[in-house]
Image (cartoon, rainbow, N blue to C red):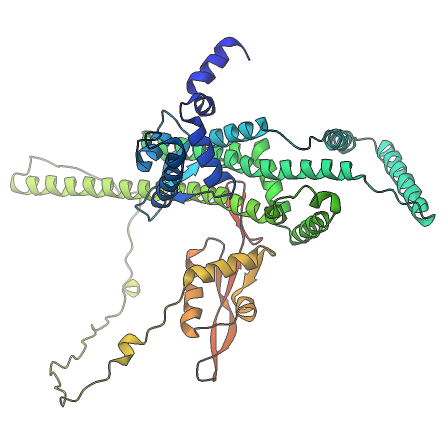
Length: 492
């Protein structure tokens, strides 16, 4: 880094502006408390403003009433402006309330500030071991000589045989408490840095989405050329080193076997006495669920990009059809003008390349129109009171709860049928809940409704009777970004 590069970063980078801001302590402490510590990816404007107002109230009690004179809403708008760039303010589809999210630059600054504090334990052994292990994987993974690989495997087998022999003799080597704490600290640091990396990956996809929207807005040439440029940019992100690494990480994380192994390892590590002395954050036990939640946000960004491409194609087709209709109407108006004052000679001549043929059998048979019989008489009741209980006896089905059940089931497998969902979570509201599942299947990207296969779903109603419904097979699948399409449950 030279002088001009650093000067440019000082003037333009949001992280540097946060470091030099007059109220940097307020901004950093609040963002760390609201977004980073609880791993919150998105928050509505009203909820975030309420939290900031409470935080300012407590600070004014200790710092004085004149410490922070502005309103919480004003602070949020300032932090999300282009001048600061510490928060991202945007609108979600179907919502008129702004949402806020932490920018990657802010999370980078918060991580650096957190590293300035005193650390009770600084481990170096685990990092050196990690370097050796990564270098060993690089050398062994790029070796093309079969003989060299065989020698490496034989050496590893000899080491394993030596370890087995020592165990049989009763000699067991265990890690010292210092080594345990060293490795655990490295695990916690790496696990938390992954959450920050998700925001950076999502930011790159949003930058691509913004570039695509700018191209669509300023497109004047042929549609095919623009689409080619868009899909090339989409492929460039998916096939980049970062895109490939994210896809491989997501596939590894969503493996049921890997999730079970990770949970078992974390549980055993937290039971170690040396780790308990560090008083670790219990949320580390469920860190993989935070990874999944952060990864879903990135997936939704990819899905929004794909939806933008589809809307662009549909809009272009509609505009082309509209232009064709305008040309046809112009021809009709010109023909009406010529009818009243026809020019001398032939107006236009068209030579047919081949004679036209119209067979009588090609004409459809006459079908008489259907005339419905409508009884216009109005029947008058006898004046008796009619029970209105049916108008108020309505069943409300919580679709958000059903979606949560589907996503929980898909955390451990690639796809699950509606029949299996009902077996795992029996219907509590009967047919209404079953119809809600069908409604969710029509809205979810990874769901498939197969009309060629039928399945029977049964439940017990409030009267204790067994009810059955025969319906098309419904399968919910997990969505994963891969290439320029969305992969759902093993089917594209």
